[in-house]
Every structure is written in C-alpha cells, then in structure tokens.
Length: 384
Length: 241
Image 1 (cartoon, rainbow over the protein chains, first blue to last red):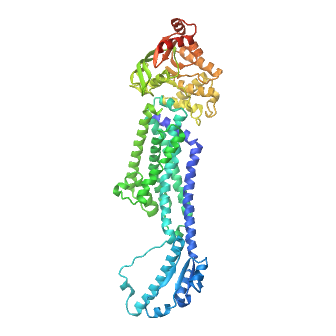
Image 2 (image 1 turned 120 degrees about the vertical axis):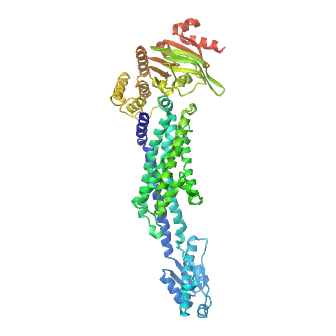
Image 3 (image 1 turned 90 degrees about the vertical axis):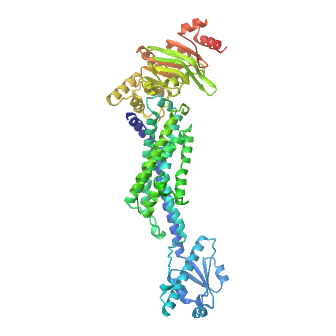
C-alpha cells in the first residue's frame, strides 16, 4: 500500500508538471464542445434562412385567396407572367404554378393540381419545396373540411387515423446527427485526454531509460502500473468532467429552440453525465497503457494510444447509428452502457441508477484486467 | 555478498551468459571486465531480477533473486548503464521515490537523503528539477538514488562512462569509501585505469563465461604480461582459441 502511495505521489507530480499533455487535453475539453456549438449555430442559420424563402408564383391571379394564405404563413412570393421568366430569375428557390382552370375546377369540386417545382439537387430547395407543398395541402384540407361541414359531415369522420409529423425540415436530420456527435464527443473525451499520459507511462520510461532502474526496485509491477493507471485515469476523468461542464455552458447558449432540439443540460443532468463518464476515463487509460506498453518510443506509443479512439466511436456508433440491439447486456457492457446512459440523461432526461452502477462496475473490472495484462507485460524481460 | 552459480542465459540462438559462476565478497570491489557483448550487462540484470536466468542461481546475501525478487532487491542498490532520470522531478524527489520503495518516510527519509547528499556533495542540486543537468550532476543523482537506502550490496554497470574527470574522481572516492565500510561492490567497466585502481578482484569475461579471476597482479603474473590490458587480451584470446 505504501508502495502504491509512493508511485501515485511521483506520478501525480510528474503528470501535473507535464504542461504540454495537460494543455492539449484541456484544449479538447474546450474545442470539442465549441465545435458542437458552432455546428448548431450554423444549422440554425440555415433554418432561419429557409424562413426567408423566395417563392415565384405563376398564375397567382387565378387563386388569390390561396396565395394570400401562403403569404400569411410567412412565404414571400413574387408574381411572374410565365414559367420561363420565373426560371430566368435566379433569386427564386421554388416555383408555384397555378393553372388558369383553377377557379373552374374549384367550383366544380374536382381536384385542382398545383405544381411546386424546385431543383432537388439543392437540399435547401428540396426542403423549401416540401414546406410550400405542405402549406398548400394544408390549405386544401381546410377547404375540404369546410365543404364536409357544409354537407353535414364531421371532418373527423373521414380521418380515422391521423399521423402527425414534426418537420424540422432541413435541420431535422442534421440536428439529430449533432446531438449524436455530442454523445461521441463526450465518450472520446477520456480517450483523448488520457492518450499522452498513457503513452508516457511505460514507453516514456523506456525512452528516458528509467524503466530498468524502476524495475530493479523492490516493487511489484502491478503496483507500478496501478499507480500510473490511477493517476492518468484521474486526470482523464477530470478532463472528461470539464468537457461535460463546458459542453453544458456552451449548449445553454446554443439556439436549440430554433432547431426544435431538446437537450437536458441542467446541472443535475450534467452531473449524472460526468458521473457516467468517470469509469470510462479509467477504462480508456487502461486500454491505452496496454497498447502503448508495446511501443519502444513515446511517439510510437502516442500513435498506438490514439488508435484506441476508434473503440468508443465504433461501439457507440453500433448503438446510435447501427441500432445494434444489445438488449439488457447493453446496459451492463462497457462503452455501450455509457452510450445508452448519456443518451438517456442528456437527450431523454431520464436515468437508471442500476444501469449506471452495473455499467460502471463492468467497465472498471475490465480496466483492472487491462492493468493486470500491462503489469504482466512489464514483468516480461522483453519489455526492457 | 553476491554469488552467481552456473548462470545460463540465451536470447534466441545467442548465448549471452554461459555457465557463469563467481562470488563478490563484502568489503571488496569486484569488477567484471569484458568486451562488448561478453555478457556483463546481462549478468548484472539477472542480479537485479529484471532478466530471468535460463538456469543457475543469483544470490544476494543468500537470497535467491529468482525465488524472492523483491526481498533480493531490498538488499541491492542498482546503478544502471543509463542514468534514467525524470526531467520534471527534482533531485530530492528522485531520492524520495526510491527510498519510498524501501520503506523510508518522514524523518528517516530526510535523514537518509541528507546523508547521501552530503556524501556526494549535491546539496545545491536537491531542489532543482533534473532537466538540463550536466552528465556529472545526473551521475550524482543516479548514484544517490542507488545509495539512499543503505544497500549492503551495490551493482554498477559501467558507472564511469561519459563522466568528466571531477565526476570520475568523486565516484572512485565514493566506491572506495563504500568498500571500506564493508559493502559488497560489483561493477562492470571498460576503463582499465578504473579497474586496476579500484578492484580487489577482477573477473575477465568472454562469450558469457568467466575466463580468469584474480587481483591485477595475479592476472598479470598468470598471463606473463606487465599490464592489465595485455593480460586481458592475452587471456581472452586464448579462451576464444
């Protein structure tokens, strides 16, 4: 126990004086959330840009009431005499064509066709066209309902089932991706912040020729590796916590309402999020120490350690994008449990204590296993 | 006392140490003298328990290194062929780290550090980080680290390599004092002047084996030469033949 304290004291001094590693870890804690914040801001700008849609209308005079309703919904429109003249005007994103038989068909109660044209290669134009189409269809439904009421039929009787879509338009899918990115960023925080320290733990000793002197001391290799692991893990956990806090502060300032995105970033949710990440930080460092123990130089070890970033991305990706169903195991397994836990806490506003504790235990258990493997490697004379 | 009994160690097809036996007694400086690749460093590493012999025994004060590595290391001070310092730690923190593994803390630790610091005239270095230390200053920290826990047995792998004259003089003086204090000192060296001046017992090594053992005078007499260098060349060449 005294030997472990001795290793911890030395490692803590050494690590906290390594300004380069500390600063580069903290840079991620700031720039990671900043990137998410900027992405959300950029998407919000695009959403706001769609509010200022320029719609060209040909034949507006045939359906003045309908066009007025579109204008009431915030659609800025310009009348054109012909389709060609509207196309020649580069400012128009969407073209609405009303045919001259509009009134005749309307009065005859036969369906009136309105053409909504846009260049669908342009995602923004596609989204705008869908928005205009939805508005016109909405207007058409209202007219139909009025006719039904006039005929003594309640409109609900022809709507046995009604599906409601919440259209975030252009922003929808990208916003969902950004919220996934938030989870990825938090999951890899521990891996990024621990990589330099993990690289230094064994390969650094080897490179500065201190490993041989260290191994000739009366100390068990497991104690040595445990001391190094706990120190690097604690710093990595600290950086993960800072990342969560900075993310919370930045996302509180992000235009989430504009995007229709709901995140739970109140202090208690952030606290839970940080708590979920703690064991992962220790697992990250243990994996990185094991792979870095094979390296002859610090630089080589750093490269190996950074390869491990793919582990949380791949596992979390299988949960979030691949929709791989891990069942109950997912709540217990390392990384999947943290992915699901973070999603629950930050995106859904709920948490499961049992899942958090069981996930933390298996994660720490696996980490201790990696520490033991690293110690075994260090005991091997080929490690010198 | 250090005893090596029929030590064997191979790395693949290369026999690094081949049936080596010797005894280094308390109150004596025993020096391993051999060409590069003759098995000196491997032998000393087996003594520290960081390389495991294929067969044979390395004993430190009768404790078998392979059987009880931690107990054996408590009786040993190891000075490797590289100083291996931590640039972000002070000299004091280096000594505190090693002494901590040997159970030193509090006043006992401070007293042990003060003692070794006085011995090596390094008080001015104690509170400085070792980054930027000269080779001589680095040697002092490494040697202090080896001595801070008062080991009865000392193993030094080419300790004078790369040192300036002043540092070399200090090191020789310290080794003599330790010998006179009854410690067992086993070192390896290439420097004939060091070997001749310091050693009570010289062990010529070649191909992982002991070629001849004795004092400088005994070795010169046995080889019919007038210098230790000639004696070494004559005896190791005969062995190779």
